[in-house]
Image (cartoon, rainbow, N blue to C red):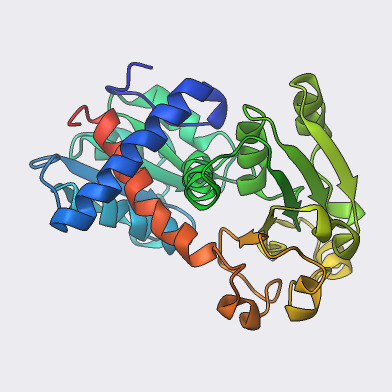
Length: 308
C-alpha cells in the first residue's frame, strides 16, 4: 500500500499484508513510547477531529496519538456547536476543515459518510465510525490487542457476542478476521444476528462459522470472547430494543465454564453485559484494548502523513 494521503474508510480497503505491516509499525511505536514518552515525527502537522456522534475512546485516543507523534489537534466533539446547526452540508464542512488541517478523522451517524467526505477533499480521511457500517481503526487496534495477547491470530477460536446486527465494530472485525485461519462463533439473539451479506462473504472466504444463541454452551470452546453492547441508539423501534435488552451478561458464573486461557475484549462503553467483577479476573483484556488504540492510531496517522 502507498500510505501517503491514503484514506482509511473500510477494512475492505486493506490486504492482509497491509494489516500486518501496520501492526508491526504500531509495535515499534509502542516500544519507542515506552523508552521516550513522546515522539516528534509529526511536528507542524495538524489533525482535525470531526465527531458528529458521541465518543470517548476513539476521539481521545486519536488526539493522544497525534500529540504523542508531536503534532497538533483541532476539531469538535459535537456538531451542535458548529455551522451544521445552521444547515451546512457535510461536503462544505469537510472542504472547510481541509483548509486548516493535514488529515481528518470523522465519525458520523450516516452510513457512507466517511467515503463521501473522502471524495470531497484531498487530505486523508480516516473513518472513526459511520452509522452501523464500519469502524476500521477499532478493528486494527482489536487485531493488535489479540496478537499482543496470544502472539498470533491464526488458529484461534473467537466468539463475537451481542449486537451483531447493528454493531459496526463486529462487522469490521469479522471481515478482517477472514484474512486469518480462525473459527468464528457468532452468539446473539435471533433479532440481532450478523447481516446475511457478511455471513455470505465470510463463507465465500472460507471462514469456519458457527451461529448460536447459547453463550454458556459455547464459551468452553473459545480462546477469545469479544463482547458488544446492545446499542439502544441504533434501533429504529424501541419495542425491538426492549425484546433483546439484557440478553447476555458475562460474569463470574459464566466464566466457571471457560478455560483459563480465555480472554475477553469489549470495544466499550459497556452497560451491563460484562459484570465489573470480571475486571479483576485474568480474563479481562478490554482496558489493554483501550491502550492499544494509541500506538495503532499513531501508526495510521504517521503512515498517512508520510512522517514515519
